[in-house]
Amino acid sequence: MTALDYRKGLHDLGDGCHAWLLPDGSWGWSNSGLITGSGASLMVDTLFDLTLTREMLEGITSVTDRHPLRTLVNTHSDGDHMFGNELLAARDVEIVASEAAAELMTQEAVDALVNVQQVPGPTGEFARHIFAPFTFDGITATGPTRTFSGELSLDVGGREVRLIQVGPAHTPGDTLVHVPDAKLLYAGDILFVGGTPIVWAGPIGRWIAACDRILDMDVERVVPGHGPLSGKPEVAAMREYLVFVERETRKRFEDGLSVDEAIASIDLGRYADMPEHGRIAQNVLNVYQQLDPTLPQPDRVLVLEKIAALEGFAAPTEEVQA
Image 1 (tube, one colour):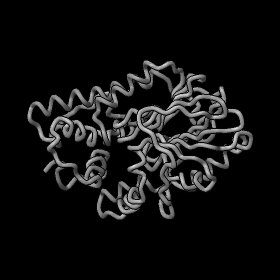
Image 2: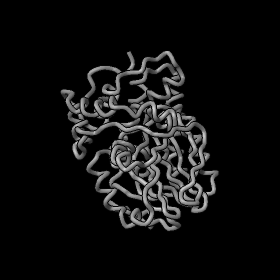
Image 3: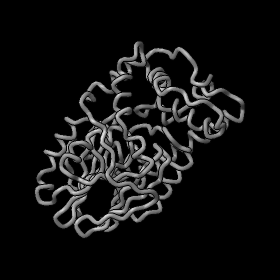
Image 4: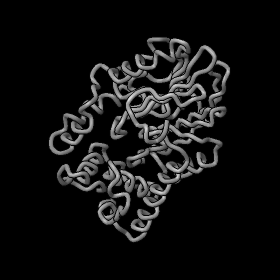
């Protein structure tokens, strides 16, 4: 498989490792992984709804019939990486996640996505647009049966799989899943390829440090949370975007600009044509909150409104910062 081989479904990566990819990698279209050992396998992340996860489970039976699923690792708490967990729990699969991720894997997270689509005006229109392919009704949020912090080594049919917590970064509990003997890494949403990353937790410097850690690791292939199979060049490219955002935002903070003024004044340059470029609104806000912890945390619906406006879904009605 190459980075150009970006089609939906199961991809054999060699060395007993696989990826399940969901093009085009935009909002909700995430990737999963499958690592096999002797008579057992470990899944990396489920998908955004039950239909997609059932389709994946059926699509990987050629592997799991020989290597039954024993363990699921959630790389973080976002729904597009864990809303299918209940289907694995029903099979008595052990679910593992970081302690910080586990705290956010709640039914409230499911309800929030249902509710945002009912919001009137351009925000609801945008939410319905990006989430239209997915069905959140009937999902029972299912968290881990085992948690950890820092690092954890798992045995998958006699082979080592290392879990490395690098959050808070994209989210509070981001985890890398490393298969040392395959020189392969499942990065979760520490890596977006072909789209704009979004810093929900931060600080952004920790995400940059997570990229540095990957670049220092003995890995040759990286499965991103969103996008095609990649490697260190894609990690380095995304790191450059994060450094750009931090540098340009800090300048504007030091010049006394408001959050909205900073968002409006940043020339994205070569990043302007990236899908989901409107996520700059949340990324700038996150840097401002790190520089001034007294800034209030706006409702995520308001942040989504800002992103929607930048992507052509009408102008926002109020400022992010009071």
